[in-house]
Amino acid sequence: MKNIVVLVSGGGTNLQALIDAQESGVIKGGKITCVISSKPGVYALERAKYHHIKSRVIARKEYGDVVEYSTAILEALQEEKADLVVYAGFMTILDELVIKAYPYKMINVHPALIPSFCGKGYYGLRVHEEVLKKGVKLTGATVHFVTEVCDGGPIILQKAVEVESSDTPEVLQKRVMEQAEWKILPQAVSLFCEDKLEVKNEIVYIK
Image (tube, rainbow, N blue to C red; front, side):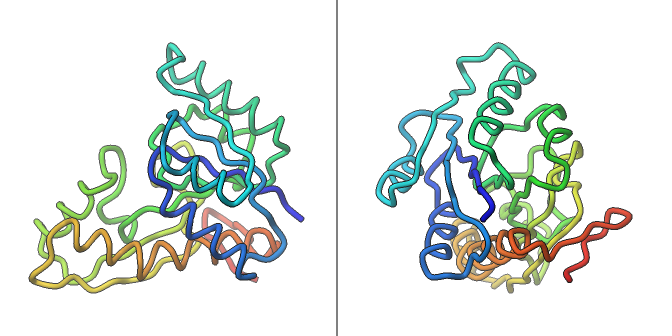
């Protein structure tokens, strides 16, 4: 049984999707053993508490720079014996020292179809604002491995969502979460925990 550590910074809707998937048996071969938040007092911590999952706060503002903060996160991951690290609305880009310690063992969900609308600065509502500005007809979500390149790691799963002419960024964000993010993130976590993912030449193959 693999130890899954989830990194959060806010409300924790993706964390909730993972918890629900775990409790309904969608996630096989792994269990959420710890939730680490970059901010105190966020609702994601309440979700963890309600479901009797251990949580820790490692506040970004208490550390001078990214390297210091990343070192603290790495120590926590090692203490928690993390086999898989999941970014679930985690708003801090960590130093490569963490990524090097967990190669192809860290995954993130991004609210667009990578390589579109991704990279530095593309997070939260901004992604959906840009999608609507561009007039694309399909958007969606991507689960990918975390590498040194922001949103640039090998793609594990993607799911498309239709864009409607009446959409606001908020309405589109909700649809992408409900129809894509909350479905493919637990699927990808389960595939990892079942040892069904293989990376060759930066391409993910599902066994």
